[in-house]
Amino acid sequence: MRIYRIIVTQNSNWGVKGFFWFFILLILLAGNLFRLYKKDRIRFSQGLAGISLFMYLWTVLESTVFTRIPYAQPQYELHLFWSWKAVFLHHDREMLKENILNCLLLLPYGCLVPVTLGRKIGWKEGLLIGFGTSSVIETLQLITCRGLFEFDDIVHNGLGCMLGVLLISWFCQKNINIHEGEN
Image (tube, rainbow, N blue to C red; front, side, top):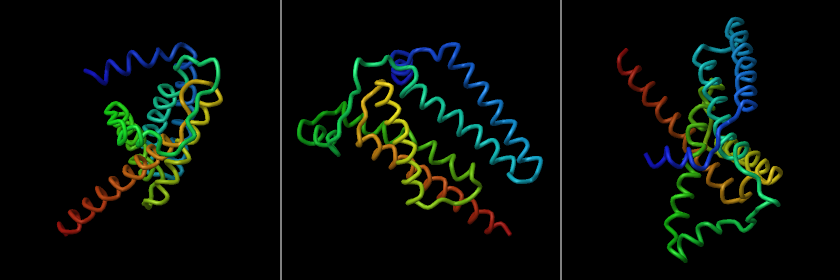
């Protein structure tokens, strides 16, 4: 219930424009993925994962950038690990929750990327993908004045993406071991 309240109160509606662009891009993506599937360039599961990845990333961008009310000027915090200083020095539990949620934000994204690409991704590549994706989000927040640009979020989101990559790799390895044991 609490997470629902956070989503509803902190994120306004997508609006007509948001839904329009979401569905236009979704249709274009689905069409391209279907074409690749028909040409045997991707598996069906990769296409579904690609659509899920798009939907998840769109939702993240909508909630972290596009539906936020802009500030009068850009907001930023350029000190690395400032949020952890607040947690440890001032025992700031809300900041701890925010740090954990920022780690969890790109965890599903990290799970979907290897499935979409149809290959295993190492932890370093998962971390770099997370850093890159989060850098785009944070830069959009800075440019549009819709959120706080901070290096801590890039680190936390990158770690979450890496954890997602590791989680899906572990899960796939467990499934392979289970299926190999059945033969």
